[in-house]
Image (tube, rainbow, N blue to C red; front, side, top):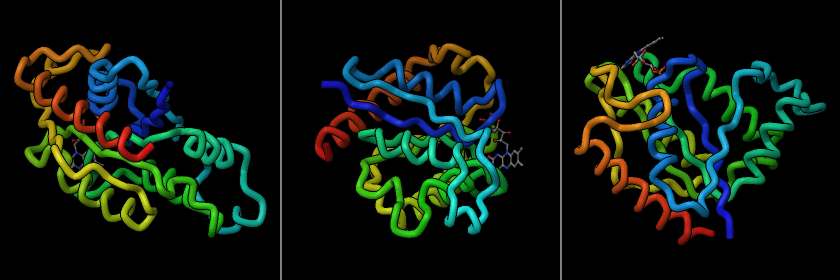
Length: 183
Ligand code: FNR
């Protein structure tokens, strides 16, 4: 049967290299895995006053997360952490208190950056947050893509470099096994 994966990309820009990376790994999954990109660009900024009456877009986000069997985060690094837009989405879906939409789901994080960290520090930051939010995160392999060459992954998610392609396939195989073990 179908396994639904909620994909959260930590960049809103159209030409995002992380969006390309998300598309690239989506192509490498078996066909029972369905990847659904979750919108985070139309959420309000989290405000604890929401907890009394949650906004419609915030409820929509929670429902989409809750309806997924697994999570995949693909994030850039902004100033050595995750972008605010992604943290905002995590905060929203984690509340109101006692209704954490992420709880118990299997997940993984990968990412790309222009800098030589390849988003490693942002991914570590995200792992901290998701440990608290009770997400069972795949530990290995870590995927830190340094995206210096614009042609590495095209807009449809085709990977130009064979070594990178093989490595992403290894990641996806491990991710699939991890998700199946948890569902
Ligand atoms: C960056 N960038 C960046 N890169 C990195 O490797 N480490 C970092 O700490 C940062 N910090 C940072 C902060 C801000 C505010 C911006 C806008 C950018 C560069 C980043 O890797 C580059 O812009 C990527 O292209 C962002 O990913 P997307 O949007 O292409 O997916």
